[in-house]
Image (cartoon, rainbow, N blue to C red; front, side, top):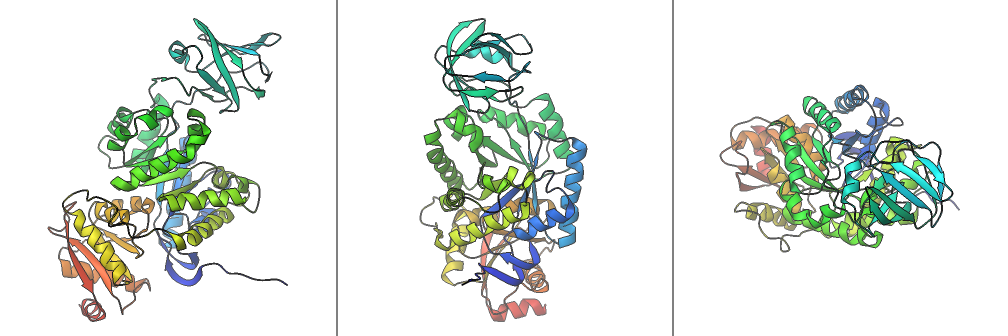
Length: 502
């Protein structure tokens, strides 16, 4: 017997927690960040990804030229226009990836082999039986390594222990593996102290500023100073900085990093090499908890649905991984190879949307009593979320100048939709990364009555307004001043009618 089950779908205009499009869309509050690549960078596929639940797109600057990324960005913005919606764009800055140099041939390493790292740039070769010579692209690191520290090759698959330091560094291989040219190298015990923003990164960041991307993800961050350097490179542009936490010293310096960041990414690929693998789940929970506490977005990344790069269905472990990240409180779950080079990117996003929607049915909402106020206005945001949920409001209408008030409301995790309006278009797109926030439109009205009328009218025009209400509106005085949200208004059916008639 065949059973046809249709999960959580609605066939009408609905908020897909970041956009408004017509079709079968799954309601969810946790956001999806999808990486674009050769299998997903055309307009049609991008539109399919948005309809399936993508809230923000990642441009991976470890690959591709500026011309390629410019074309992809243009396709994103065309898709947004075609769907009359909004999504965010994150530029992932590649950073100083440490790699071995070129090799004459692949090295088939076995336990007990000795590999010598030279400071001079050479083509790696097999010196004799069980002895290999290589170089790395950041030779200064070799002067900072100590005896008995570990070096991981091929992105963590081959482990070597340092046994001799005499200008060069000798290490003994502790497990078998094949090493090829340009593979990644990690130093989980060594504070390498290199500049995390390379000359290439500076050029790439300038491209992002020129093209007005919403977020910049900074790779291999070590401390708060790295984020301060990145901020200076924005030259006053109001882009948001995401610190990618993928090094052991970043975990140790996390409080300093948070002070200078607009969000975090739990980059579990390199992080799982830099710290013991069994620490990754608890560090993930710690990073999410800290981000939730101070109200900045956090992205959980790497291998979330990796098997779907080639397969139609995810593994049970991957499904549980996504669900647990949602329950931990992450704002965003990220897809990398799955959507960049995968066989069916749209299917991957649809799968992730289904997992999120189902998981959020047991989500721990309403955290007003668990969090301390961030400032004197925070009592407004906490009251709004409690009032909206207690009244079973149809939505919270959040008018924000800087985006902060909507982000603060999100921090308390209300069940009620946060329907967000801004005073400028440039504030709208970055809100796509914030949990539960539905960026609707920008409005410029100068008085409270006109602003409420405009918000309700826009929702009505998009077939999103329930005229029976109630809605909870938050507005700031003076109008347009960041951080001034200080008014709560309950909009009943009679008031909704009154404002619409205006």
